[in-house]
Length: 294
Image 1 (cartoon, rainbow, N blue to C red):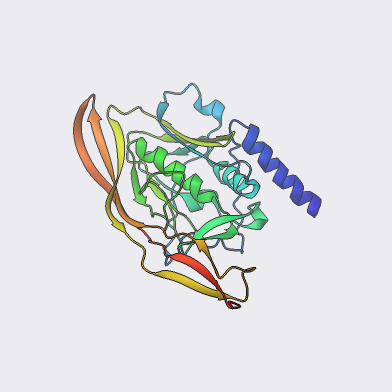
Image 2: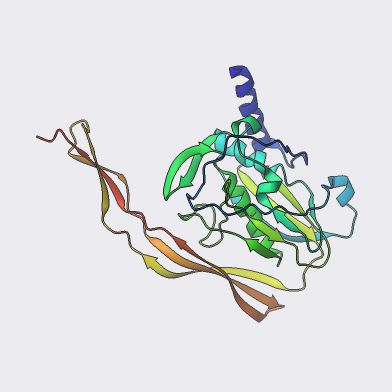
């Protein structure tokens, strides 16, 4: 069993480091071990999509579709479990076709993030804290997909921010997912679109292909309010190896933010639209205090 586990990890690392594109195959088994909520927020219903067939690259190349948008984020290939999770989740988006008027559920497409399905332990966000959980890193996949999608000028039915800002994207441009929180996209454009994902050399890229838009879009993350942390969290421990106290978590500001889409026709600004508003928690400092102080 240990040899098999090691082989799976090595295979995932090699996939992330070397492969250019992913297989279109996707598992559909229903694992029983649930992914910890990455935000600790009350559950939302998972919305089932109506998505068309998965096209092979050969089926798509040569058709009248062009690159509409793309978005990339970086990840640390030295974090083996997280890299494997990113590669595994992204592998579900190889020339994935979403027909005109159809909706795409991230959770229904990717499936449960469980050990049985090949996911590993890595850091996730839960209740404003970074903790270790199965499937850490999958939110980077949903976030990268989200950003490619909105840059294609397409609509989003359901998106939710993490409770803390993400290092791999701007404020109000993240898309958390969990067992109970879904990212749901809507193809309200003209004709079908195709989603393709690539993970190579520490870069995750999503591309959307379809009928090119005449408009050009820019996105601006704006901070409406900075929320200072209140007080500090104190935890008493038996000893700190001669120290009286130790700060184990620095205080972090919270934010009220919004994402604005600017639509241009050539160089002329045609529309300024607020797509979403979010709140990121302020986090107080955490201090350990030794009980054996003389």
